[in-house]
Figure (tube, rainbow, N blue to C red):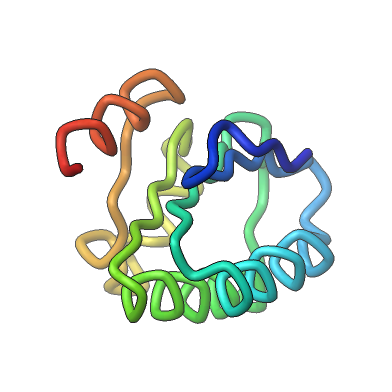
Length: 110
């Protein structure tokens, strides 16, 4: 589910199923066409993550940062967080416990 929280923030809840390509295609297109939007992605029900999803996250993060915006990942459970850590990307992404703490982090950087 993709939800526009405000004029400058998109919130995404990824599905349990690891086929996220349609979500990332929409987000990458949005980041290209509407460059002034932060993105929060909720992983709370995700059980697996593919290398394709990680690659798309890297692309999205770069698109957003090129425009001065942020990508925040929230609700990332231990097994998925371990994938980021083992791949050397644990410090590359910004993680928060849940949607409220992610929104608070965005509020504090504006």
